[in-house]
Length: 128
Image 1: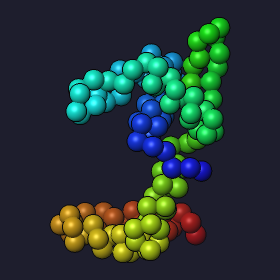
Image 2: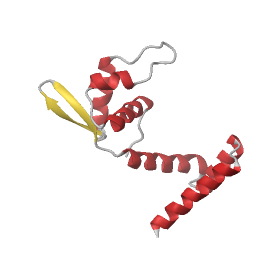
Image 3: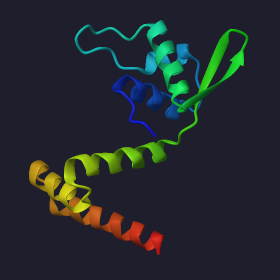
C-alpha cells in the first residue's frame, strides 16, 4: 500500500467519515489553503479522487455522468500501515524509541503514560 499525499489523505479522511460521497459533497469538508484562504477547485478534487481510484484506495458507483465515490481501504488498515512506516523511518522500527521521544519532546505526564500503558496491556491481552 502506498503512502498518500497530503491532498489525497484529506480526501480520504472525508470519504472515511462520510462512507460515500460525490465530489460536490467532498469539497465543503476540505480545508482552505492557508496561504490563499481558498478551497481546492472542483476539478482538482475530481482529479485527486480519480488518482485515488487508480491507486486502489477508492471505487465509484456511476449514475449517468456523475460518480459517487467510496473508500476501498479501511481507515484503520491505512493508519496501521502509516504508523509502522513512520516508526520504521524515524525510530528504527522501535515503538519504545518513539514513545521515549514523545515523552521527552512533549512533556508527557504520568497520567498520559499510565493511559498508554493500559492501552498496550489491553492490546497485548487481545493478541494472546
